[in-house]
Image (cartoon, rainbow, N blue to C red; front, side, top):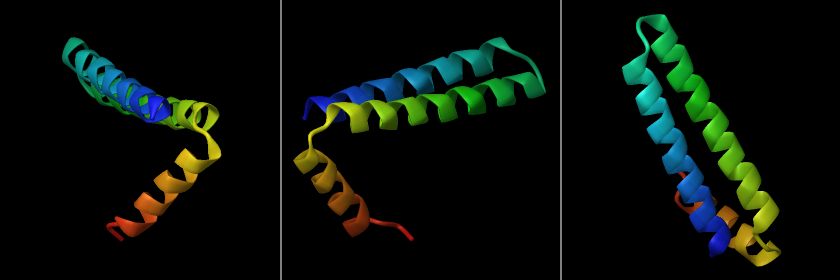
Length: 71
């Protein structure tokens, strides 16, 4: 459960950093910085989850993603 909270916290911090960067910069650099921060934050959040979660948590997360797939 701790791994899921850490993944959520990192994703929220990445979204906040992207929002601040988007508001502080002008033009195309705002879009590039926001997109880059979001991608890096989500990637880091997933890496942290995989490192901290136990096998059962990973399996449950995968099952839930497959069950609730929007594709």
